[in-house]
Length: 616
Image 1 (cartoon, rainbow, N blue to C red):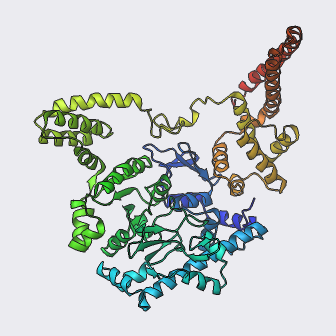
Image 2 (image 1 turned 120 degrees about the horizontal axis):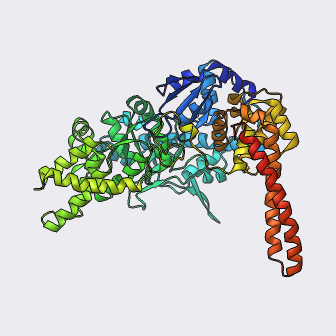
Image 3 (image 1 turned 90 degrees about the horizontal axis):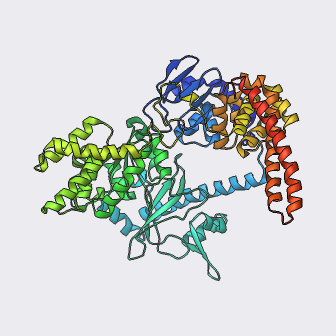
């Protein structure tokens, strides 16, 4: 349960931090009774559903169901693993961190990861040396300098050159004791039967790719000659996933967090040139469209995203598609419009960084303005019918805006461009908006059932539609979470008799937690869970009043014992109904029907008893 970290280290970290102080660095909290409330940092919402309970030292969001202790919060807002969050918090609190012994499998995994980190670091230095100090690398160095990159930039981004030699890197890595099979797994080498290992990258300018902590985990290479593809990334490996990593995020992150804005670019060179132009919150995706994983990573650090993709049709198409993805995760989105199909690198090279900042970045369009300009190309505005169809499409876009003043702004723009009264345009737009609202579920967070009504502080009492037996299991778990004796009673009388897999897993963790001599402590218990789903479920349970369940615990246990019996009887009835012998089927059905009636009567009696506790 300790994820290779001693329990005493985790306990020391949790005792060193107050959950209110930890969360308060990122969320504005206001006091409401025994807890504090604020806007959730993990999903977009208009009314606060995020609560912090000082007494229990936990947080829980009723909207997206995120929850946990101070360690889990740091994991979420800073994108860290459990171990990374514990180490960071321990070092900040001056708590010694000694990792517990690991299994042979974990030892092998860690050894391979360390070997890959070491190999990537060595390879980056090797490529950099080749470019700066050899005749082979001179054309690559001259090319970079022709693109406006000086030695300081080359050093900052650790740029290099992979020589046009079949197996030079493979030879050197082998001499230094690296396992070449692992180097192939890590994407540095390739292998061909009968030919051995050879270099993955040859005759390319090399761009090291870093993780959030600044460790090199992969490479991107730009061909110097006519090699195809022109740009090539390392394949995905145990350390690198292009759908979750962003180029230059490790260096841009401080400025992103400070400004709460991220500039999204399409390529390595764009990110480098934008950095050199003084914009140090720029990151780039790597040969893939922006993903939800990218958006979630960035959302923990920023509130606004500025898309600065190439000005050609492909870049504008990518920007158009990215807007919805980013807005869905709660970003305020703006789009830079580059003239003449240029990319950021070309614009900066031609006009300079100052003009790029002033005209492109500061002059970025709102997402709606960009969408309106983007769809114009689909219509012939010199033709009356073309204008009509464009205005209809534009009004549908405007109808999606929630703020009345924003809708009015774009209506006025359309009215000033086309010879149609603003009132008529507004009337048409209102019709589209009514249709849209009918289709849209109300609420701040339509994808989460709890948050489907406007928050007024009472949403936690929203009537649930869970089956009765799941209510019983939740009530039992809430009692177990708050009372050691209750957990022991459930273990003795019910054991693993939970019908829901999630509930059975939580019960098993609670049995193990108390077996180690622990007392009820939700924050400490959650530190031992190894699954985000379990953490969220435990956080939700912690907000449940356990007193009614404690009073009615024997009845809940009795109910859950009857429930599987009823399911078994119903199964037997179906089997009897499918028998080929009518007389035997009738005989069996008669007995089964009597037993079902008896069990249902007992269940109804227990339900009546449970309802009297007002906790069911």
